[in-house]
Length: 101
Ligand SMILES: [Zn+2]
Ligand SMILES: [Zn+2]
Image (tube, rainbow, N blue to C red; front, side):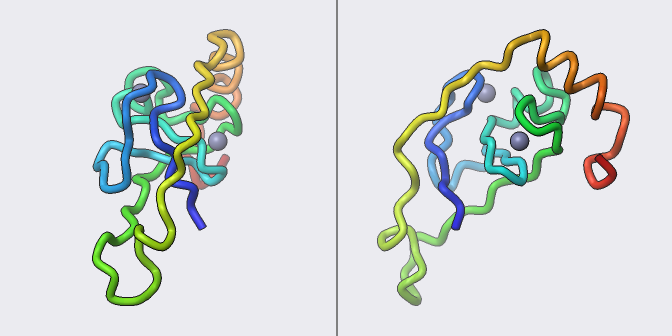
């Protein structure tokens, strides 16, 4: 189950459940759309993977599977990428489409 981390790991912009700006990699590294586009260029600084829009967990409880029973995470994972590491990851992965990395 997705953690739904509370904010961008680079700029700390709040990304609550329902945010249309939240992007995640396959490891759930979580960044805002602006950082993914303009800072990371769609290369995760931690794993090299690409990003996709994070799904929203339903707030309407038609079943027990909703945000009230499975709340979003509250622990921030702020870790602004080291510029050198980011450059290295971009060199290795940036020229490949995310599904071929
Ligand atoms: Zn950000
Ligand atoms: Zn990642």
